[in-house]
Image 1: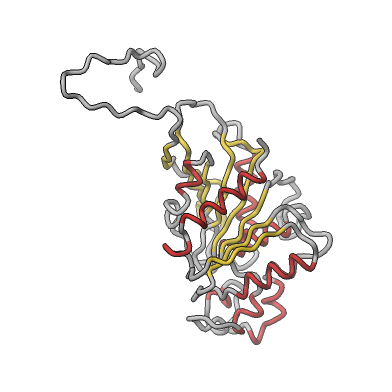
Image 2 (image 1 turned 45 degrees about the vertical axis):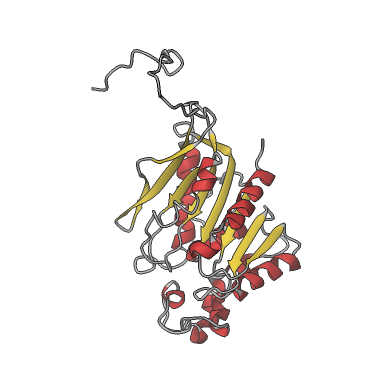
Length: 302
């Protein structure tokens, strides 16, 4: 049984009768601390309990609702480590956003478009339980990096038209989408300089269940965000960021996505992170985080 507290924080008397020599640090009541909550199982598919890992801002106001930064973890579409980028996004949490990292089925369990279906299912779970969570469902942002950036971009393009969906339950409004060094066109992955051979027996072939991209270009294109962008597709704000020395997902993938968005007059911003690799310390520098936070603050409904 939880012990009952005799005082609230406001009622607790403050000790100010210090012994001589005591040094005082002034506490900051407006400071925001990040803490990791318990994982939530949002659904079970193919025998896997799929989880949301929630990281919350902590302030003195225990009843406050916070905007949501919903992030799809990159993993080459394999099993994800949900902790991989929590520290990279710490500044976003301490800026006053809940971070929700979503787990999706890996490619050895379920092929495309399972990852997009899982992300949308996770968001619907949050929508339907927002009264129980410290989340402002009217201020939602969706992000993803690498293979998760592919999922985020796919969600952006199909969010309002029920394409790549397994239910007609309406999804919540999203203030903005973010694609960090994601795959945008599987059919051209092999064309650009990369540390890996994407054409044969690669994560890009595994996600569509083939041995070669070159031998299955039509199927590869059907699993690519650029194929879902047209005059009628979603026009919520999209932020694209990519390191121009990315050894894993070619930088040109984001150029293709950006140019397709421009062709159809989408609301898009594109940043090259100079000298940035595939994530890592050079990419997740303070300037990158500042751009991310500025994007959130630009489109949040205050």
